[in-house]
Amino acid sequence: MSRPIHFEIHADDLERAKAFYGAVFGWTYEDYSQVAGSAYWGVTTGPQDEPGINGGLMSRPQSGAGAAVNGAVLTMGVDDFDATAAAIEASGGRVALPKAALPGMAWQGYFLDTEGNVFGIHQPDENAA
Image (tube, rainbow, N blue to C red):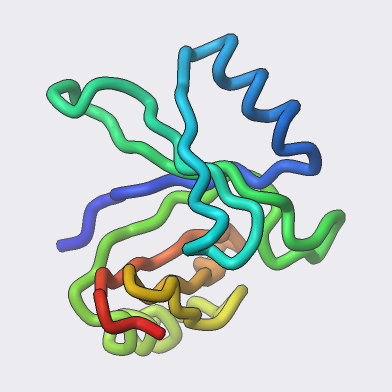
């Protein structure tokens, strides 16, 4: 069974989004742009000893109708990216953004469910390159 482990909020203006969520919810940020290969801010939403998940703020890769990712995205942790991707497609889901390495960290990809909602899957792997 896979649980949500991460969220991402896509923004047109990262500084504006950081200011908004910081002011409203008290979220803090860490720059992960080097790992992600593009502007990406890790979001800490609260203390580790309280329920909840952390996430990220990233630049919206595309805008408008038909964009692969346009909004907020839940990411599920998985043990085997390829097997999970195959199960998604066999169950009627489609690839939104293909599998990509977060070097030294994980494999990440995005899919559309049968209702057109975007979600991510994430397989930790220190050897991802």
